Image (tube, rainbow, N blue to C red):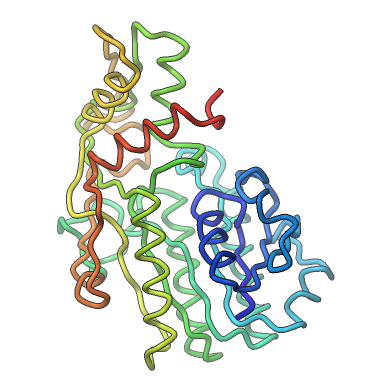
Length: 323
């Protein structure tokens, strides 16, 4: 197969690159490096099975069109602006980088008859879920522009899948963590504590509770779901990809301070809303149901949320990502 991975220099995308290049697939990465890093894929730059094209997917150029013309079997669309907080302050950035870019990819898939499309969606499409753990058929009512943009992308993909026979897989990821990640609460805490090891500012009341999945489990679930949709007569399917438990922000702070060997750190809580959210548009409680995932491919994560957080802290403390 010839595979395109948009956002392939980013966090999840680069691990997909590792997996599929090692399996002998021809992999082409399209990335503008706005949030990705070439270091994540540098070991493949001289590989015969790998090609990198720096491109902004809001503006499709001849290089990209020519790649599709040669014949692409599968597109992993993982390019996006990942910062939920920025979507509240500058909504246009998220609309253009998520919705417009997705439309352009869908048009290329339609015109050049791509067989398979895998889309990285998000737990944020559910908003403040009324059912926890939250199943895939829960109402979709995002409370952030980021979540709204992801939902808009989902709707477009579902429609293109029906109209143009593109077999599509929508994956609603929980909080995915691990080495190579470059944003999120764990990195924020490490940076703050390196700056001031005596105090830690915590956005929100610390009681926010969410599910975290390590990147190793994420890739395992993702590639097995890809095999599932290839080998079954299904035109479209949607899966939650997350963990079976959750963890509070304060517990994450405790793990970070412990792994950094810090003692007597004073926590300073800064809630942005009266009910203790970290920022306007933040979902305070998130735990996805993965029953469908478990039943469909007989899968479950190897690490729970606390183990994933601790492993990620260790990886990031030994990483050049955080300087």
